[in-house]
Each structure stands twice: as structure tokens, then as C-alpha cells.
Length: 306
Image (tube, rainbow, N blue to C red; front, side, top):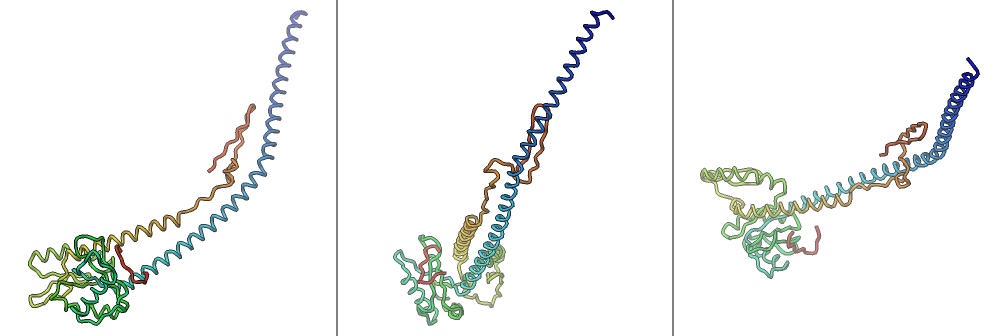
């Protein structure tokens, strides 16, 4: 190898060595800078993550407490509603419904009450005065017909006395019947088609409470059997409509008062990732990538409320 070749070789060797050292130094420097940045970021984020963890624990405790309180409130409201329904059922035991009682446009509570008392005393031969009546009310919207009248007596005894004497109405246009519960009305609705079928067969089928009774040839109809089916169906439809309205009110009340309240997460308001999110730091030679996942009806009351 002559001098010229030796010089060329040395130059190439020196260039390769310099390039190799430069690459190693650059890589080492990048790694040091990357590691330093990671350490710095971790040190900065760690206290914030700790604070977020504490805040979320507090929020979780509050949410749990709120949930428990809401459950208690729901239970109390449900209990109150059950009591109210129970009271309504108890009050209904003192109710009767009168059909075909004349209705005039200027009818007020006193006039309606007087009409009812007159029918009970004159037609039914039962002693009755205003103190025996809790309230009276026309049922349904005002139309060109005589709407049924709901009567609530102050005592069950008086109601039973009136009901016992309803056969005295057999020669009048009036009729009086029970104020059936929603459940009983539903049962009676299901029985009507069968009752009508029996009548088409010339059988003397009548509906009594939740049963169909077929009368014998020598059996006489009770006064309650003479209630016009259309009148009874109209009355039951009115009561079903009122029950539906009450159910809607209860549903709206529950939706409005017991809608779960969403508590904002304080961590999200600061732009930080929620606690429990695992942060993965992926390091390359040129960048740091931080990834993470976050995530009824014209009722005229008499001073007593129901």
C-alpha cells in the first residue's frame, strides 16, 4: 500500500468513525432528553392525578349518599301514594252513583245536593240530611244529557241504608248503583261480551259485581239489574278516563321529582383525565406520545278535601 492509498484509507476511516460517534452521541442525547422530559412530566402530573383521585373519591361518596337519599325519598313517596290510594279505596266504600237525575245549566252544589236528598227521602223513603253527605259531584264533561252523580256519604252505615232501599226506585226513572273500583270495573268489562251473548240466547243474564248471573223464570230482577248498560258503560268510561289522568299525573310527578341528578366530574372541568385511567407513555427517539381513555270533572266540593 503506497502513501496515497494510505491517506485515502485514513480519511475514510476517520470519516466513518466520526459519523459513527456522531450518531451514537445524537442517539444518546435524544434518549437523555426524552428520559428527562418523561421524568419532568411525570413529576408534574403525579400531584394533579393525586388531587383528581381525592376529588373523585369525594364525588363518589357524595353520589352514593345522594343515591341513598333518593331511594329513601322514593320509598317515602311510594308509601304516601299507597296510603293515598288506600284512603281513596276506603272513601269509595262510602260512594254511590245516581243515574238519570235531571241536570240544569245553572246547577250549583246546593241545588244538586237538594236534588239528591229529595230523591233519597221521597223516592227511597230513607231519612237523609246534608250532614249525611260528604259531597256530591257530576261526573264527566257537561253535555246534552244527564250526567251521573257521585255521592259520598259521611258514614258507611248511611250508604248501606240507602243501598238497601234502592228497590224503592223501581217505579221511578232514577237508578242508583255502587261506585266500583278500577280493578272491579276491568273485570266487569271482560264479562260484558259474554253477558250480551247470553242475552242473545234469550237468557236473563245480568252483571252483579264481578259475576254474571242468569236469572230463572221465576226470579225477579233486582233494582241494580235495571241499570241501563249504556249508562253504566259511559260511567265506567268516565271513571277510567279520570284514573288514567291520575296515573299520568303520578308519572309526571315522579319523572319531575325523581329524575337522577347528574353531578359534574371536577376532573373533566380541569381538562385532566379521570382517576382510574391508565396512562401509557410511548417513547420514540423523536417524540413522547401520551395516551389514555376517559370515560272530577266539574266537582263541587263541600269544604272537605280528598
